[in-house]
Each structure stands twice: as structure tokens, then as C-alpha cells.
Image (cartoon, rainbow, N blue to C red; front, side, top):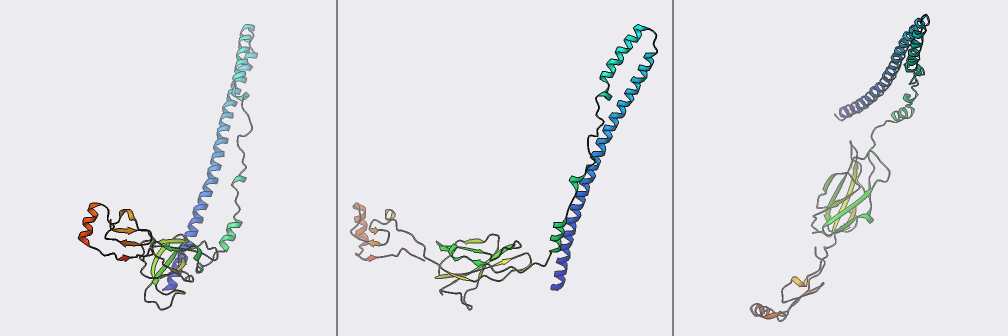
Length: 284
């Protein structure tokens, strides 16, 4: 079955290549024919103009011959003036007998030597090499993870990438046997991807990526492990309860620390103790 599919794909690719060559051939042949028709039409137009001018000149010549045989001096003078005016306005004396166009077609010559060499270099599609993840360009923070990678060798046949990731509590190289399955992000067109909306309930995350061409996916990259650092934030004392003393690093409850009569009433109702509770800034 696999061999049959390969043969079908091969025939389709060569068929598409042949169709492209046929289209190019038809277009270029049509260009040559259009050029030939244009030049033929221009020459025909010029020939028609010259024939019309020749007919007019022959009529003028006959009129001049008849005038020479005129015996009346007054009629001769009048005819001579008419001949002079007609000669001055005759198209034949303003025409150029040089062809407007040339039969040179060198601008439509072709040389497909380079293209033939390219066709002879056709070969089967290679399996993509494994990408290489760039740890320096990767970042995991604020419930997002950015992973960047590169191909060790240039490959213009790459169609897309597949990024896989999973959460783990183990530092160092990813373990072969892991309780969690890999999550998959497919059809990535760039060599970088950002995962958003993550929940960092584990200490680390594993990442790996593979390149794909139109037919097959290559080997996985060497996986990397990145630490899922906590989301950093600060407490805002301006919006806290009146009995709370808040700074960037801690929260303290003080039952006597209320402001104004309202806070005193609340303090009596709640009767809190002077217990101090510290909350770390780094939370998961």
C-alpha cells in the first residue's frame, strides 16, 4: 500500500511539472506569434500607404504629361501651378521607404541550460533533520512559555514544525518514563512559539520539537527542561482592609490599626488578635 501511494504521488508531481512546462511553452509560443503578427501588420500598413502614394503619383504624372501638350499659354501656366501645388502636398514625397520595424527576433531567443540542470537534479524528498532548541531564547514566566529553535542546516523544504511539551517535577534531562503525556502543538510556521494560559502546578516543563516537510516528520530535537518560575506580584496597600498593614513583601493584621470611627467599630466587631501573617511574593 505504501509503495502504491508513493507511485501515485510521484506521478502527480511529474504530471504537475509537465503541466507547468506545457503552460510555459504555450505562453512563450503565443508571445512569438503575437510578435510576428504585430510586425506583419505594421509592414502591411506601411505597404498600403506606399501603394496609395504610388497611385496618386501616377495620376499626377499623367496630368503633367497632358499639360505639356497644351498649346494655350494661359492654360499651361494655370496647370503648371496646379501641378506644383499637388507635388508639394503629395504623400509620396513625405514617405520614408525604410521599414518601420525589423525582422530581428533576438529578444525572444531562449537558453534553458540552467533550467535543464535543475531538472536533472530532481531527487526524492529527504527526511528533515532534527531542529536545535535555543535555551538562551526560551522563557517561562507569568503563565507563558516561549520556545525558540533553529535548523542546524538550511532546508527550504520545511513546511511546518510540531512542538511538544509536558509538565514534570524532575529537574535535568527528561525521563523516558513519565506519568504525564506530551501535549502537541502542530502546524507551526515559524521557528518560535509562545504557549499562553498555562498553569504552573509543576516545577518544570519539558519541551521538544520536530520539523516536517509535505511528506514526513523528522526526528525530535534534543529535549530541554525549563523551570516554571512563580508569577511575581506586589501587594497594594491602597485597596486593602483598613486593619491591614501592607507592603511589597508582607501583610500584617492589626486590630487597633483602623482609621476613623468606622474602623474602630469594625475592630470591636471582629476583635482580632495581633497575629502577623507573611505571604511570599512568589506564588504558583
